[in-house]
Structure formats: structure tokens, C-alpha cells
Length: 456
Ligand code: UGA
Image (cartoon, rainbow, N blue to C red; front, side):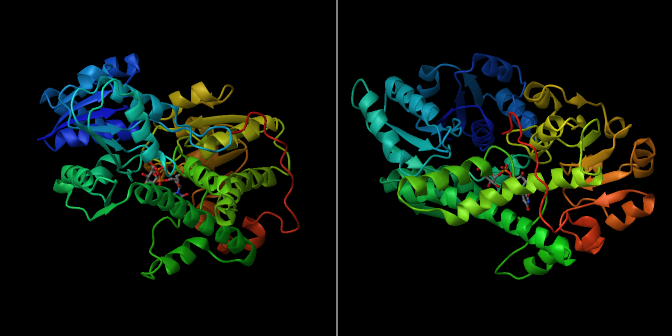
């Protein structure tokens, strides 16, 4: 049993703290947001994450997990302090480190005994050294501490399982003993361990996310070529993925990646390269393809409607950037909804858990109680997020209530032949067996989309 303090109660902080408590440690989570902490104390979660609420409540009841707004209280008995604060993108794509800076300063000001400070937030290479410098400068009296970088690889929607069964754990530090001590906290997980220097650990995180984003953009580019050449990208991905050197994961073509990680991290890595005099050609292409993928879906909708969205209504199934989360940060659905509204169309939508977040983000969107209500009187229905509950809808009923029979499956979730059999005019992504001429947007140049006001 160790005493652990976690700074930040966002996705990473909350999951890290709760899972460490569940492993039998004493954890105090500190957040400066009083509202959030008071809700957490009552067992109310600030985010939707399967399994989290139950685990938080169980560990609070067992007295192993506590929440506070006070650094003093959080650090009182702590041997390890995890920094898990947000690192949003600044205007130029660089990661904004103001929250990391303020956490480091607060730790320095309140620490009363030696500490191991662990950075879990995704931070630019070199931030570990910078954090150590800030702590040193901000300490009223010198007290020994070490900084360890321990990047997090968990995914929203499966965060608890990802934490408890990671593919690997990475620890980077100039102080090998400190890195080994942090590795000891993860020992019960029995995952392969990489101990390295601090900058390499920070780079492993960026390179991993950028590589996964690259795979997605790669298969999305292939999907566009498939559409033109009459091949099926789903089968192509399956055929590729069986090769052990390639593997099957992150080869699902669709509407492009979104969320709070890939878009921000690829941009930040490209920015790091740029500021050091390099031209990040591949990363730039990954981002360009990802932007295009959202436009590609909008073009499909427009194409079905004869080129104009003026006065038309589009229904969106799913708003979260992926299933099993209420996160709508950089969600493709929002880009699509904004673009439709900017082009004079109306948008109706339903998402099992993300609607509250969208209502705050996007004025003018019509939020519905269920998928069937979305379908009523719409000209086009678009499947944007592949939630399980959309998989077995009564599609005859859906079709029956629509104004026009147009279905765009932006995640290739439905069986095209079946949908056409029911009577839909069906479009998907890169499934050339639909007939290149049917599914593909015109080969003779893409029609321009009017500039998006207030787009992400
Ligand atoms: C991602 C990484 O997978 C985690 O390892 C990492 O810890 C996390 O970022 C982070 O840096 O914090 P996450 O953003 O939760 O996790 O979601 P993913 O499941 O990776 O999906 C990201 C996006 O890619 C989603 O929009 C998803 O729909 C899209 N995607 C994913 C595809 O379009 N195709 C695929 O084949 C896979």
C-alpha cells in the first residue's frame, strides 16, 4: 500500500486515482474546481466512462479514495504525486502548459517531505526537465524530489480495462531509482515495462498516438481510392490486417479521428518538428487527410441532395467522437452539423450520452429523444458514431418516417445490400462494391464547400 496524490480529476486523473485505489493504495485526488470535487464527493461523475462510477463509489466507501481542493491535504502523506492536468492546444498547435506549470508550482509550495512527481499529462518533449526546474525554483526551502514521465495510453470508453491491462508501461527519468519505484506501483498489472530517459518516454507517447492516427488516415486515403476503383476498403483492411507485420487494429475507415487526443497530439508533434527547423511532411498529410474525411461525408450528403443543403433537414445518429463516451471534443459530428447549418440546412440529432455536451457547444441543433425521432421527416440520415444501439434499429420503420430515402453510413456499420433491399439510397465509405459510380463522389473534381463559420 502506497500513499498517492493525483492532481487533476479529468479522464486520466480520475481513472488513474480510482484504479490505484482499487489496487489497494491510499489515494487523494486534488482538483482546483470546487464544483467538480463536491460532486465527486457525492459520487457524481463529471464524465461518462463505463465502470467508473461504481469503482469510485466502492473505493470511496472503503476509505481508499478521497477528493479535495487542497494541495496541502493532498500532499500530506503522499510519496508519489501524479500530474494529470489538461494540456489543451494553443492557437499555433503547441500544447498549452499553463495547467502543468501551475500544478508544479503548487506542489513545490506545499511539499513538506521528499516526493516523486510523475507526469502523466501528454506534454511536449522536454517538459519533464522544465517541470523539475519549476519545482526547484518555486520551493520555499529545498526538499528532494525526482520527476518521472509515465505516459498514459488509456482510451476513453475502455479506460478502466486499459489501465488494468495495459500492453506496456513506460517510465522515463534521470533518476533510475525513482523510475523503478513508480514501475513498482504498476507491478500488479504484470505488463511489460520500458524504463528509459525522460525525453524518450515523452516521445513514446506522441509517436504512439501519431502512428495510430497515421494508420487511420492511411486507411481513409485507401478508402477514397477504393471508391474510385470499385474495391471494398473493409475487405482490404481485413486482408491487410491478417499480415502479422501489419495487424488488424486502427484500420477502420470512416469519418476520421476526433477526440481530445489524436487531433491535438499530431498537431503538437508537427509543431515540435517545425519549431526545430524540420518539415513534418507525413504528419501534415495525416492531418490533411483527416480534415478531408469529414468534408467527404458532407460532400456525400450534398451529392444525394442534388448539390444544395438549403432548406433540407439532416439527421445525425451519434454525436460523441466515438462510442461509449460523452466526449464531443473535436467530434466529427460537430464539424458536420456546423457545416450543414452554415449551408442553410437543419440538423436533428440523437446520442445516447453526449447530448448535454452538444447543447452547450452547438446552438440551433435539434436534439431528439431517440433515433426514430431523428429519422422523422429528414431528407438524409447520417450514421456518425457507431453506438451499439444503432446496430439493430428497425430500419423499415426508420425509412418509413423519412422524407427522402437517403442514408449515409459514415462508419460502414450497416450492410449495404440489406439497406438497399429495404429501399434506402445507401452511401458508405470506400466500399466500392456499392458500384464506384454510385458510392463515389464525382471523379471530375470535388465541389467546393462554403467556408464554415465557427468551425473547429
Ligand atoms: C487515444 C489512444 O488510443 C490512447 O492510447 C491514448 O491514451 C489516448 O488517445 C490519449 O492520448 O489520451 P482515444 O482518443 O480515447 O484514445 O480514442 P481511440 O479509441 O484511440 O479513437 C480515436 C479516434 O480515432 C476516434 O475518433 C475513433 O473513432 C477514430 N478511429 C479509431 C477510427 O476512425 N478508425 C479506427 O480504426 C480507430
